[in-house]
Length: 117
Image 1 (cartoon, rainbow, N blue to C red):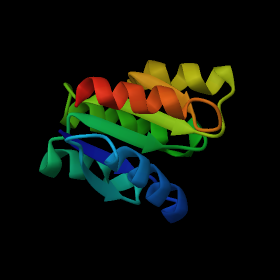
Image 2: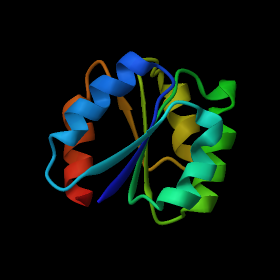
Image 3: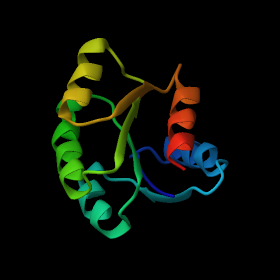
Image 4: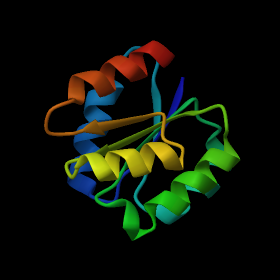
């Protein structure tokens, strides 16, 4: 299974990649720039996209919508340590299938990716 990991922070991206790569059969493609997500979607054609985001008003909602358009069947997962309910709802309304708080829901992220692998 191909997984596209989009996270601007190299430290967080490396940690997420290490955790996700421990899952059987997961091939991870990493990119740093949120703006590159839709282009990467065309090239990679992932089954799962894990997108790190701080706040949806920083261009992330538009990038999520573009990524959803490029690969409508992919499972879109947004992860963030900034997760007030109002932001969670905005991400889900913009096309995310799941939104997980990195400080408390890593196990849910791993379980969701496992279901798709």
